[in-house]
Length: 178
Image (cartoon, rainbow, N blue to C red; front, side):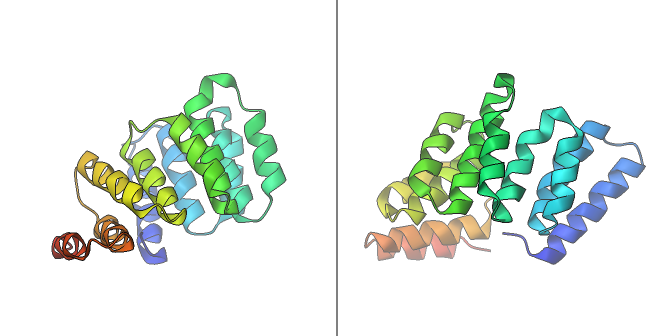
């Protein structure tokens, strides 16, 4: 996970790229919404998401983070069917924020595991459910699908190995952390 300072730097860099014309407006909005979410600027993220019909589903996680679960679910229930993958992923995130991990997993699995971020969400959810063996396997798939290993992913993998008694594997995972 990035800290607030890293997210603020990411927002500044995104704005710099946009001002130099290196990104299309739609790309800027797509990247800005999650950055605003991680900065806990939920209202700003909602405004950005609602400004473009293609990104309305992304507002749901901000509603959920603010405890406005009914609004989050209502928004997602009324999303255009063509955005099914985004909708399922966002629905999973809303349930995850709510603490309804079984439901979150169901929606993350519906959205598919084809993107590294989806694999990470499945691994995080399995870990929250206490299924450390399955979570470790999911973390392994997530880590292998990424171009770069994130130290927090390796730390999560080590936690899961420990969760089902695999101390040696946990130490090996931790040895890979930069």
